[in-house]
Image (tube, rainbow, N blue to C red; front, top):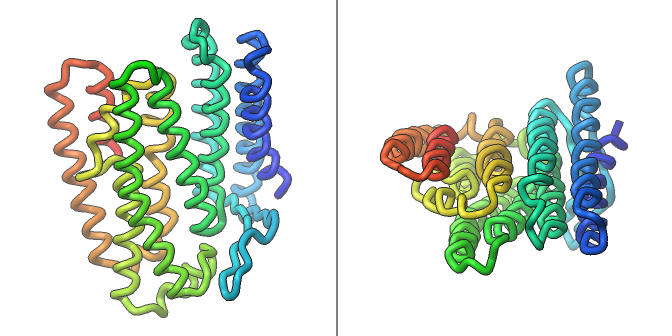
Length: 313
């Protein structure tokens, strides 16, 4: 069943390559259809993986040894378990519907083919994020969705305000990403690996202070990506991008990456009372503050933005 993971990942990459390289010379409907079918194939794979995972053990795929330097050894490997498959269904299911909607919404845009290439690349990056079997692969996908977010928010780059919004989102996310990266470094230094299974199995034997630091740093990454206090102001501004981008990235998928990270690291947070309390209070404060701000907004997209931030909290 590991082949299903390969197909799910490769399908949007192939769609990205075709639309990005040849889309300029293809009819718009053909270009949109190729990109949409690529995501539909991934969605079908997600359904099949869901059936497999529900009835048995998790599905694993070790593609190749990616990094081998001294005591650093990282496999380019993937894990489809109940958590990652649920996320797959959301990413590919919602993603496919938004691809279909975008065919009509972006039909008159000059950069039609580029838009669909970016959407396919985003789907691939998001799948890598949730399917990675270790924190390094997760970070690889994490940065990929950050890049795609920047490209899509600032898609109408001739408008300076949209460009500013894209840069703001990119910079504020980098702040959170730095915390996540440092957390992964400390995690590797502590456990000697970044593989989920090995890390979670050895969590109980590590000092509480170290686990607390790791969990807090991981949560800093989640705060940036999921727009929590104090790094939440980029999300309302990011609504400057095309409406399908707001729906796909800033309401349905990318902003849930932080929640996925905390849920995936649940075995660590169980042993980190302080970090868990910080998650609780930051989430509660964000829910209340963003919900209150949303009540006073006049722009419908800003209302939806603050509503999203509130519900993420």
